[in-house]
Length: 396
Image (cartoon, rainbow, N blue to C red; front, top):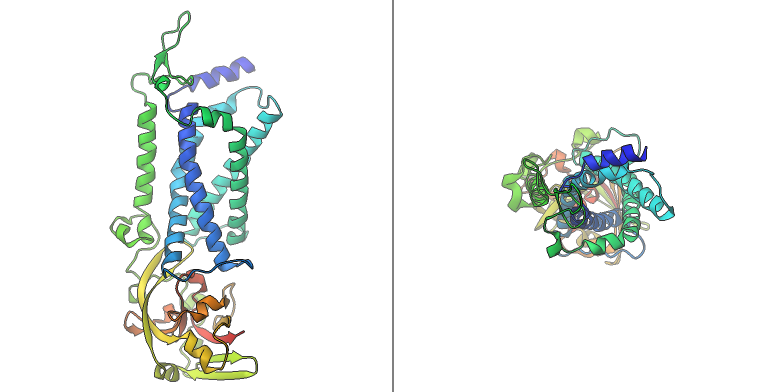
């Protein structure tokens, strides 16, 4: 069995499979996973904030940037992970499968990392298209899988650190040489990888192909997040400048089942603070001082769009009911159900003069699908927290 499996492994010998190549690919993949992990933690913290969470409101496009980088780095990790698997999978054929406790730990960390990474990247990519064919909650699963990946990655690095250090930098000895010994004439590299046979790829060509593929994937999808890449946006599910009032929409009024309530002639915005209560009709809100700001709507799926929003400042509504300016808010939508029907707004957003109860978008009355008659828009927040079809604002 040992001879057979080792013969099969030898058959896969190639310049595209070597310790040096695996370390190079691991650097790229580790960087993409690290960026994706950190930006994902920031996004999760904004939606489910721990007690120590800091909420930056400037620049206003901070979440647009971080979530765009999160999704883009996740997409970039897909070809990098596949390339790394290509470079190492013959190792799985070697016998015996576990040689020692350290080797068993290495195998376990690799198995956990690969399984979690494939699931994470697949479901994350599908999520950008707002398709959920699985029975488990995406956001919670995505969050905990990220920790599993990060932990197994750190474990794998710790176990393989001697090899990583040895092959971290290219050396002159990495140039192809010829194996010595009877009957040996095939060129090999310093780490034992076979030099390219005629018609086969070299390590440098393989890395160039992986880098090019990753670049093309990023270039043709990142335009949904970054306007300067918009002309190259061929495959991302959202495109800037599309949708009602030239802004994309994730959840329509029909999806939320609010069309009748939102268009009702007796709609009022209810503002409460302790025992105080005030109501504002749409005309009364329009009669208040109006302010306009350019703010992005940035969604967790990675797409974003900067637009001109006009409406009443939240700070003015808080003052109108006699509440302290340092108050936080609880905002409720007309939606009859849904995870984001109720939204908590920390005081830092309520105090920001750019946070609006928006009544207009790009110089026009809000479209029904954008939250007519009124919605929240605040700097630096995920789109799911920019509540549409307002019903109540409770000052806490």
